[in-house]
Length: 316
Image 1 (spheres, rainbow, N blue to C red):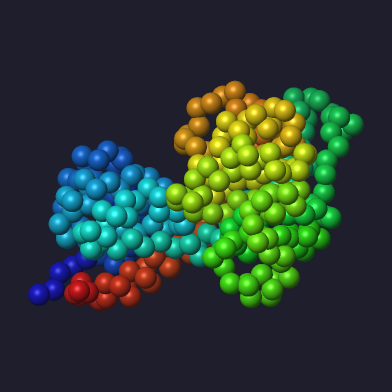
Image 2 (image 1 turned 90 degrees about the horizontal axis):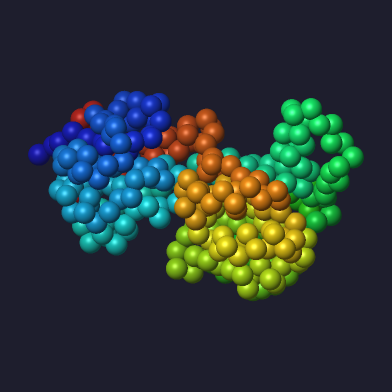
């Protein structure tokens, strides 16, 4: 017996991604909200559920998806998906971490440049008529020790970029083989404490799990150099936000740039208004190129997994 593959796209999936999925995989339904009741109503006959960083894919949703085969995340993080519930039900969780690596890496370096050179601050002042040329003296990436926490695809791309800018790159990742460090001429930190102590600029590129949640704690920040910087484009809960706020207020950290937050959207206006903090609304992977790459990779992986042809069979 053959059955046409049906796809459910979460609210917020780009229209072009949904269109291409419909052309390549099968009929697509796009949700109008993140409401769990609507998801459960629509997922009853769907084989693929495509989500971004929202909604939460809960055990209740998985239990009420009788023919679901795959939850597909066009991007890196899958922390909004209950993977244990999927495993119990035999549902595969699939992502496309390679699709947005360049986009996230470029934003990481862009945030660092904006922070060190006061680009955002002086732009805002100039637009208000304040020619603040003599008020702000920036710093260069050239000559700094750039610490990379997490040496996967994004961390490696960041290392490649900032090495061209004459930064000395040190990275910590206990799960990556030595040859990945050696071939990029990147110094390997054997302990997180060593990375923290060496870094003038520390960028974070880790997934969120029990090991990484709160990894940049008050104690960790205390081990960093006075006057150093943190850039986070990974997950907000990697950093203890209260500890970061205190370190920015005290001047122990010269600045921080965040694309991600403990709660999104963030509601702590006192924190957001810190003068030595710049922030963006989780846009690391939000480029046209990343969306195109993610769609291409997702379609290829779904075809390999489900073996759809022209309305063909779903793979067992």
